[in-house]
Image 1: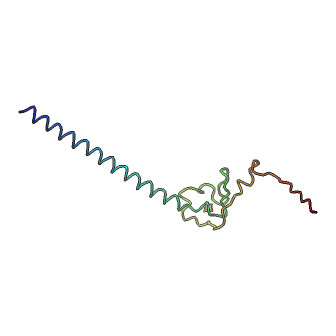
Image 2 (image 1 turned 45 degrees about the vertical axis):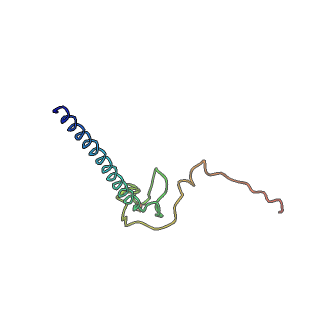
Image 3 (image 1 turned 180 degrees about the horizontal axis):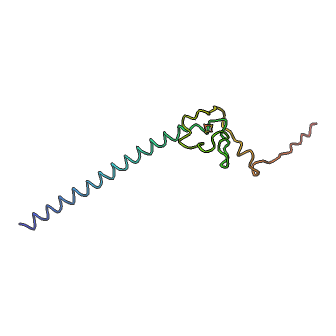
Length: 107
Ligand code: SF4
């Protein structure tokens, strides 16, 4: 009688522990996802990639504020100058600067 009661208590205890672990796992995954989305939205507010002063070169990311470029500190930057995406870094890359000779036979 006592052993049956202990077995039932053990089953109930294991059931509760298992479900509490599953619920806490789902809860923590949901919180992590929400924090990640918040962080992603915040990072998308960094305006540097749309700024004219952004060089796209890791050695000097910005000619005006090189220490804050591409960081959260750049959100609300007063020097932001809207412009097209600047590819100066890619243009200066020696691997990408190829010269093509076009021969027009009709001339
Ligand atoms: S001027 Fe401001 S917004 Fe523009 S690239 Fe530099 S830090 Fe970013």
